[in-house]
Length: 57
Image (cartoon, rainbow, N blue to C red; front, side, top):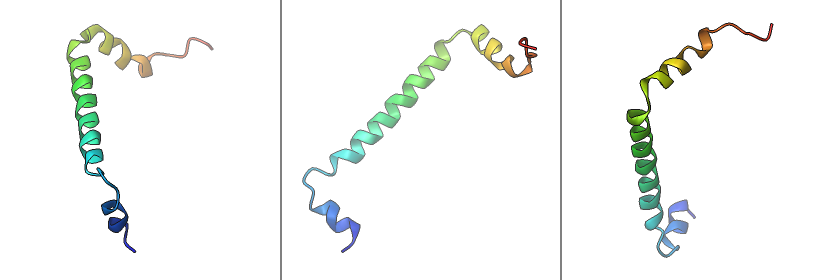
């Protein structure tokens, strides 16, 4: 028996792909808003972290 046969027997299974698509778009829209609203100084500081020396030594 193929997997698609199991999915066809579940009532309301077509809702799950729509929910996952909505979660995907909401996450990336929220991420885009965060990136656009965040101050540029924060990204400058974070981008320089790998270039800074290790102060623990």
